[in-house]
Image 1 (tube, helix red, strand yellow):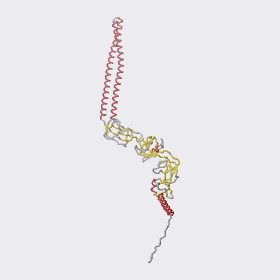
Image 2 (cartoon, one colour):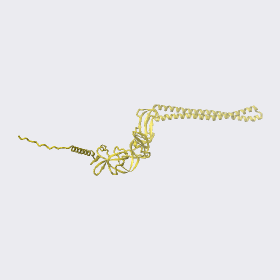
Image 3 (spheres, helix red, strand yellow):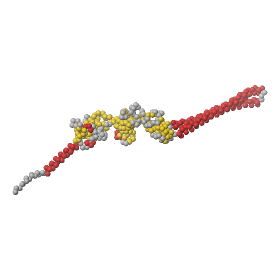
Image 4 (cartoon, helix red, strand yellow):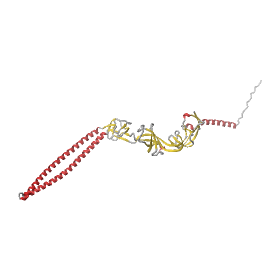
Length: 418
């Protein structure tokens, strides 16, 4: 019986060194392939923003936001206790000085006015009565003086006649002396009456002055009552716009409670809030541009608020007298303050979320190969939407300024597809 013999395969003996070399080679290939895959990513040209490095003077612009405010404002308050009877105008309405905003009601003020009128009428009547009494008194005194003057003249004539008769012995010396004495007494009485009349004039003038003071005092009380009643008709006080109305129909108001706020239309200022970190660069007198979304107004910094609120500082911008029609109180605006000018520097459009005086990595674009290489840049001061480049870039070099933070951690080379 024939036996079929199988041919034994030849054994391949692999040494340990050979196996180790093959393993290292495989790992190296895998690592190289992984690095190439991780470091090379492609993006579409339409999905990124590319800007080139510029060189020249650059204004350091500090951006802020805020609103326009009336430089001249008037707060209107309730003059006395009252109830809101009618609301004539609402916030935003243009007003003149005599424009009626709100009508208030208080019946007590009308009663006080009527009482003041009656009291004034009584004081005027008392003054007229006083003058009549004084006139009657002066007439009586004048009549008494006239009677004494007549008696004096009679006594004088009698003295003259008796003086001749006394010399002739017809009239006794005693009778003549009595006549002479009577004449002298009448003359003294006349002088006394004249002095009394002069004193009486002074007394009458003082009495009239006191009566007139009472009338004036009562007139003042009447004017106050009338003014308080007139204040129930709340008027604007000057030309402007009704910025705020703080009352409602039927509301009860106490004296001094706010009713409305009136602001001027022509005299406007801009109150801009800027980041606290940049506020230290702002100084009084620096130029600013206020953007109303329709017009741009040139102004200057007039005040910097020392108080920090929500990491921002309020800056007051003085505006010119002549303003465009788009400028009105309470309008939301943007502000650009020129804090400084950087001369002959390299700068580029500021990438999102990038701070001044920092180091960042940006993709530098090679226009020929359509690839971008990640390079490190040292940045300087921020100037609005631009930022200074201290080192790492040259003029006319192109960089991707879009936010690619999710790619820069893994890819150092970026492909750009059209």
